[in-house]
Amino acid sequence: MTLAVSANFDSGNIDVLSIDNPEDIRLSIRQDHQSDFYQWFHFRVTGAKGVPLTLRIVNAGGSAYPDGWPGYKARVSECRQVWAQAETSYASGELTIRYTPRSNSVWFAYFAPYSMERHHDLIAEMAQKPGVDVSVLGQTLDGQDLDLVTIGEAAKNKGGGNKRSVWIIARQHPGETMAEWAVEGMLRRLTDPADPVAARLRQKCVFYIVPNMNPDGSRRGHLRTNAAGVNLNREWGTPTLEASPEVFHVLAHMDKVGCDFCLDVHGDEAIPHNFIAGFEGVSEASEHQFELLERYKTALERISPDFQTRVGYEPSKPGEANLSMSTNALAARYGCLAMTLEMPFKDAEENPDPAHGWSGERSGHLGRACLDALLELADDLR
Image: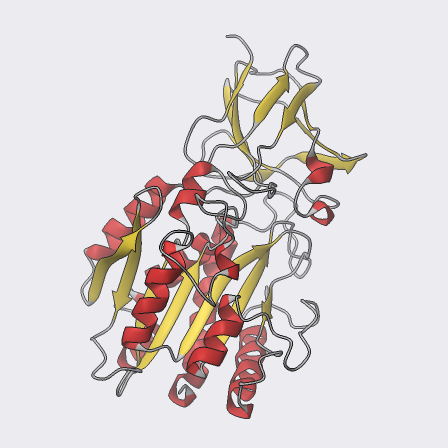
């Protein structure tokens, strides 16, 4: 077979600059459409069984978050089921990956991909579960469906009635695939009839879950933006159908059913820890909201050895919150407990795994733990 590199598939992203020498394959990550953002890569190498490969991503230094490269290891898979860490180094603005394939087909990615095909399989699986309703909030700019999974009986009144309205959204930034892996873990647990935590949560809450906020960016192989090159997590102040229909439709449904809790799931390129970012700079936030935020973080740290509260983003000063971001906007709009869960692209320093690093599977387990923490304060949400 002839050595080749391709990325013309769901979430694929790479340009081939030179492939004449397998020990010096030179590649470049494409920018998000109509945007300067880039960092996500996902490509396939064929025809290289037993051949030592050196792959150089020559424009890594100009990416959106160059601090994400030192200490990072690319993910590699020959079966597309198990993703391992490849030998990776970063110097002089280039990311270098070294790997010797055991077969003639091998995939490399920034993180374990979560394909649109897997997304559709997850939605189909949820639609078969008792007590689960699957609906479409609207269409994206590329004409894809924006899926909503609702779990629990409909709330009696706006704001949840006797039940709390709990929102979980993921992948506003499509390259942060760990977010949908985490939501998959949550959905599987919430629909497990033998799980007592899930049963109790279904009694207390109605769950509104958007596993993928950005299907267009996901399929296009974007890091951070939708089909129009718009960062959805800067659209929560004034979303529009022309630029950010994804946020527009979700916010409209939130206004309809209420929002007592929202967990927005993301990934962070540079910080090798799992952490939560809150709404500290929101001047409208109440002491009750701040108390719930601290209680949630404390509970999650106790429940999951993979979560910590020592390292995270510098909180905004009072009155300086960016209200175009979901967590801040929702905390101000609804007076609810809103949070952003960040997971690493690098390995998590709390429990490093040299073989696989932080993974989709571990993201799913952390997602399950988030439900344990939610149950501890569900009665106090308002």
